[in-house]
Image (cartoon, rainbow, N blue to C red; front, side, top):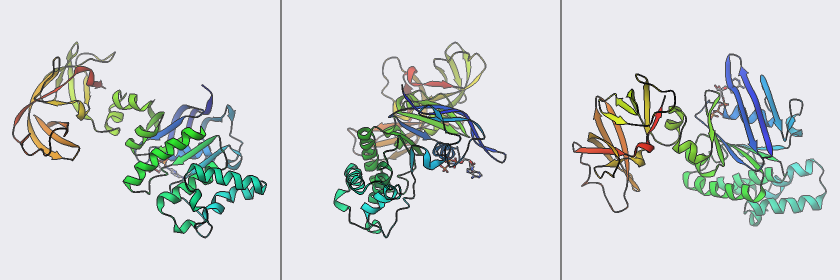
Length: 355
Ligand code: ATP
């Protein structure tokens, strides 16, 4: 695996705050790599150190194998696309994209060709003459992207580039960004707090919390096999239920029910654990062979169009949320009336035991 970026035990302190805390990461050439986490977890600071706008307090950053401590931002083979597009509103699309190349005194015919190619990539070749201010948010974001791609950087850093767009446009742009990335083969490092976005676009995701990388893996791995309760709770919805280990593969939930669950290595009797189960993995009443099952009472149901979300009380304040797909059901009115006693079940291998 050829390495585009390496962070080797990188820490960044602002006064007492460690915004990035001993992070080691290796990002491959051509990879779509996302930094995902809640506000303030250190994503932007990580990105800014790769770009060269901030220097690590400790540790090293290497780009294509070379340490970059002494390389200023404009000499690094990386480009950054920010959430605010910062286009020159009075210039037209073409001149916005050509701006950097003109400053570098690239020959005119080459500029013309590279700008044309970049605009084709983002499907804006028809709007080359439009002024930036006349464009929609999505189109402006495309211009910002073309302006970065035209430099042919080895690495493109993107900081919440779709943050200002409405949900529908955002989803559409996610697909387009991914297609462009595949086409040009540039390494993308993508900062987002939107877990769906990260799952949909990334080859790998680093989930960050309090300046640390908690888990770094492929989307499916991060979603299906979160290492820690924080990851399970942050990526998608997860039922986290507290319990105490009673013996080999037996956990007693805080609400009193006993369930079987495969314990991770080193977890023993008497230890407090969290059981994590995704709502879509939970069956109500219709149990399949081999399922773990407990009893509860329907507390609430919320019709969501695609799904109906059913909250079941397990007693003693504990709850579990199930998501039922409305494949054959038009409305949920005649199902899961609050107060109904219900069996709640799951396959043991869909239940993760986390410390
Ligand atoms: P967001 O999604 O809100 O942008 P983030 O994950 O990108 O958050 P960072 O912007 O990297 O987080 O900030 C991490 C921490 O470092 C925060 O506590 C922030 O207040 C602090 N921080 C960032 N930049 C500076 C700075 N220039 N001076 C002081 N503290 C800073």
